[in-house]
Image 1: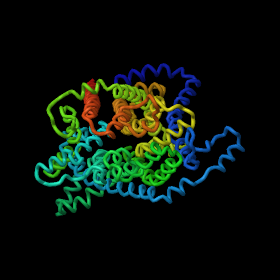
Image 2 (image 1 turned 120 degrees about the vertical axis):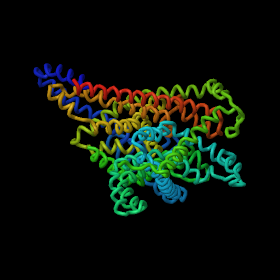
Image 3 (image 1 turned 135 degrees about the vertical axis):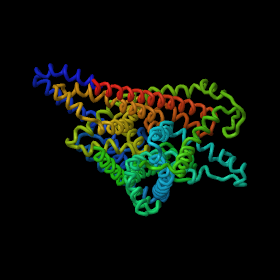
Image 4 (image 1 turned 30 degrees about the vertical axis):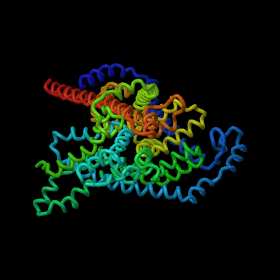
Length: 324
Length: 272
């Protein structure tokens, strides 16, 4: 590596002597491109789509292709644009807030996501803590083992739980055979199954940030507390936990935000009896083909999540500053 | 003094990993089940693998998915690396807040929102839904993951090497290709692999943005799972898991080897 560096530097020194103003201009241009290309891509494929979602959420459902009206555009000049603006309405939003189904779906989603986040934290913390305490030699392997399931398909991992949780599934077979229960438990197609699914699928997202903040912790602080007669439990709550707080926050946001809009888990494990907004949006779009209403559902969901998303971004930015 | 590894620590790790791995192990085991009932063991058999390869629909979907994943991961790696460079190297430019927001938000954005919004974009610009739209959607999602992976490597990068090269007169572009790129290569490779598996894995965004003729494997698996759990799907899942596991193991071994080589080089350089 360092050999390459020296050769590169030496060969370019000769070139630099005769470098023209044109070459400098070219380099400045390349520097601009580094920013401009990903910037434009994200504006076009991430930002503009949200504007379109918002626009369509204000339009009426129509039996057409695409199934909404009006299509906002500048095709008819400015006066046409203004005429189109007049046709926009907030009917979809009014409808959403009046229909108990949607309100329930939002409330349930937030509650389910919050409970799942707490459960994931309770399951994930001891794992991350154990990993951070592990002999340094073992840590990379343990880290790898936490990441590995994340590489295998999300859909497959959720699907695997159907076979375990269903009434004649493996969990019930085991519990019946060992005599713990006499009647099969009904877990599949309940909220319990959704909790299990979310905790299972999002566990690595919780463990990784927790581990990285626990691993950085200075263990001599605990030693000092112990020497001064502090019992381990109170040392944990007074030292370890507060120091791991950035990891706790990052992990909780990484679980909570996507869990609110989760579709696959409530659909496959929750069945038709459970209500979550991701599933509602999906059905509105694919079954009812009501694009304006599903857009309105998406806009409200986004508004619900905007505060946690901004918190997440702030936490990311702060972590980045610290690494520097 | 190093922290002690208590029995509680070991127990929580063992239980946690059992929880993480048991469902996957069971899925793999039951893909070799003779019986059609997925949860009743009827003897060892590979017949589901045979029938899998005769299932034309699944084979077509696999081919589509593989192509989408390779193309989108490759483009996303280039864009993501540029985004990571922008985030770490250009700290002052107009709209930097917006840019970092656009990189981090897709990481946590519920997939139904991303999927719906991309679909509406494609409809608005009159792009027919199909192979191209799925690929574009996957590039957009996965480039942000690549950016985060590469960025974390760039932050910890020792900039003195780059500065040395530039002091000696190497132009920035050349410095990037000869110094920076080789150093961050492992992060770029793992970024590519992450993008590849995310694309391979995605159901929700693909369902929104795909059209006739571009059914991906997760979409196929999903539609079959809704009809009922079959050992054939277990077999398909097992193959997917095997492909990913082999890829990850090869990559980590290669990484270890490169790391060892680098340390040897550094020692040689210090002696010489």
